Amino acid sequence: MRHAGCWVAFESGGLFNMAKASDRSQLANLGESDTAESEVKSERVARAALERAQEGRANGAVAYGWRRQYVYDTRGQVSGFHDVEDPVQAGIVREIVTRLLAGGSLIGITADLNERGVPSPGAGMQLKRRAVGQNENGSLWNKTSVKKLALRPANVALRVHQGVEYKAAWPALITDEQYAQLRNLFAERAVVRELPGARKHLLTWGEVATCGPCGSVLRVALKGNASRGRKQPTYVCDARGCVGRNEEALDRYVGRVVVAVLSRPEAAEVFRGDDSAALAALERAEGLKARQEAAADDYADGIITREQLRRITAKLAKQITDAQNEARRLRPAFDLDAFDGLVGPRSEETWEALEVPQQRRVLDGLGLRLKVHPVARRGPGFDQTTIQLHWARTGD
Image (cartoon, rainbow, N blue to C red; front, side):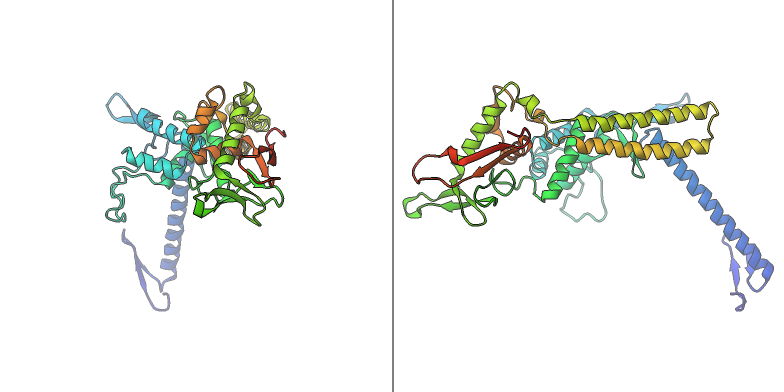
C-alpha cells in the first residue's frame, strides 16, 4: 500500500496517506487502540457472565418448568427478577423423569405427550428453516427434546458456566438422586446401544438370560409342529441352539421368582444398593465448598487479594464439579421406589401391569441372572430345575 500510494479512510473520520511514514504510524496506533478496547470489552463481558453464574442467576429466557417474576423499583421500572416453579410445566418435567426411571421409553413418552396435546418447550416459536407441515409452530415433542429436558442440570437447580456447575437461584424440580439415576441410566444405554422401548421379549439379548452349555445370549424363534398348530415362540440359544424353552412358560417362571423375592419385607433394603461411595464424594464436595467460603472470608478481612480470591474460587469450583459428578456416577441407576407397589403385598399385580421394557429394567436393576440348561427328558410341563438362578446384586 505504501508503494502504491494508497489512501485509507475511516468511516468515522480520518484520512491517511500510506506513502507517508507519519500517517502509517498513526494508523497502526489507532488499530492497536481499537484492538485493546475490544479485548477490554470482551473481558468485561466474560467477567459479568462469570459473576452471574457464581450468583446463580439465569442467563437468557426463562427455562421450561419455571416462570419469571420481575421486581420493580419505586419508579415502576424493572430492577431484577427471580424464577419460580411453574406448576403445570414442572409437573410435566417430573412426569417424564418418573416414567423414564420406571422403565418407560423415550418413544412411548413422546407419543403420549403429543397424543395428550401437551405443548412442548418450543411451542409458539416460529423457526424460518422449519419445513412446512413438520411441527411448524414447535408444539410437538420429539424424543430428543424429551431426553434433553430430563437430563438438564437446571432440574436440580444447577447453573453451568464453561463446564463448571454453580448453585442456581431457582428451585429444583427433581431430587439429586433422581438426576444421578437418570444420568447413569442413559450412560448404560449408550454402552449397550439398546434402543429404549424397542424390546419385545423379556429375556433376549443381554446378560440376564444365557445358554447354560455355551454362555450365548438367547433369541426368540418359532418352534414346534406347524401342521398340528403347535408352533410357538421359544427362547433358543443364539449360537448353536443348545437349549430351547417356551417363551411364555419361562417368562411366567421368572415373574414368579421376582414376585416371591419382592414380596419379602426386607426386599427394599436388600436391593436398594450401597450409596457409601457416593456419599463420600458428596462430603468431599462439601469440604471444598467450605474452603471456598473461607477464602471469601479471607478476602473480606484483607488477608488475600481479589486476584487471589478469583484464582482460588475458579480452582475449587472445578474440583467441586468433579466431586459432584463422581457422586452422581457412583449412585445406582436403579431405584425400586420408582416402581410404585412393586415391593410388598401388591408386587404380583404391579409386575403383571408393567410393560416388557419396564420388566426388563427391573430384572437388570435387581441383578437377576439365569442360565438355561438342557432338559433331561422331553414332555409336557416346565422343568424349573434346569434353570440356574443367580442374584448379582446380593451374591445369592
